[in-house]
Length: 353
Image (cartoon, rainbow, N blue to C red; front, side):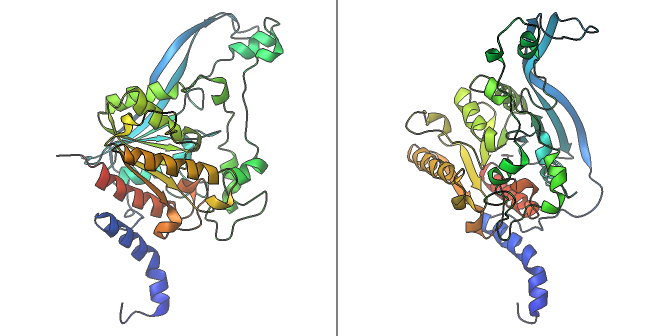
């Protein structure tokens, strides 16, 4: 670096850091931000996976709509974009609690989301809405049954929303609302746009595993070799999918999972030889909610590797990426993280020619 001034070095540091991380992984050095220009894709579209038909007499309490009929539930909505000449495995991006596939799209402050970034890097990218969330239909039958006097109030489903004040600590913007962790990377100046992403969550009213899990299995088989990328509440879903059927699963990336498999209770055989990455951001040890989950996932990774696995757990501060919230795919340095993750996938789950 001889001949470069200190200010020049400071301006160059983000690119140098990204390049160093990629070289560590054995990939070619590249800037985190793809070259500007039009986004060129081979195709895009959407479809549904899974689902079942339900007949009910309590579908409506409105005079204009009949209460009896058949609806479809338990399906997941999938939106995809395929790059021209893809040479990397498809990614399935799975959102977490109280959110939808919007998690992976344009950030609250208007920057490129991971869905676009990975397409530009040559990954076919599939973004889902979990069953009973977003564009994946929910059933009003239990609610209408109570309103029509056909069921007791205690039969109402457990549907919840996360208020922004308690969610502040859950998403690790700070220890409590409205305090902020030093150096925190989430774009709080655009938080109003983020809170608009929050939707009612039906997960507590659904069976375990969530209907999203068998639908993910079906989708992985259709894609013939996908990397399942989960976040938070959905963190356990790819592991449950692998336990159901390994077919079509090339790797698992669990970003800040709410839970990892329990070595004391769960069979670890489905994870043998399967590339697995568990990824956490910053301030985890300062969070009463997330510190125990990090510890539990460390135990899983150790046990999985002892059973012949290929699991890794990475804390972003340990590789030089600091200040990340629970919503790290929307943080100001989100593309640095995506760039690192692309290198990990390219090395660990490359498409064999």
